[in-house]
Length: 115
Image (cartoon, rainbow, N blue to C red):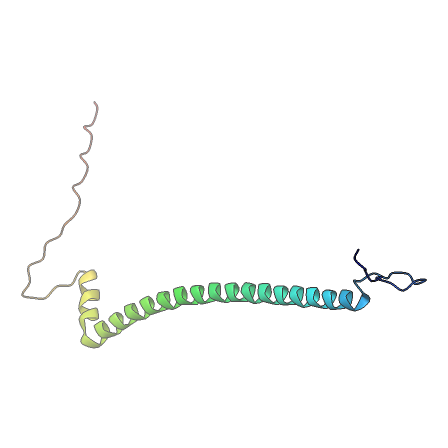
């Protein structure tokens, strides 16, 4: 026959083995994990917002670069004098040694008069 030892001393009440200290430690660990999860989610949200801003700023920079290229072309035309010639041609001027042709649409035929 085996002899077993008593788990409790006679006359004492057996207390819960999961004590207050373990509950406090468990609550602290759960709280730290929750705080870490919220902090991670917040950082991810901020990172996403900033990446959207970066994308929008890059698009705006591309538009501005295209406008600047057009302005450079206009400035070069003004400096070389070709802009003046182009403006004069729009107003109907031509060089003396050039032949000019006027291209227009054909006029619509007038309907015959009824008598």
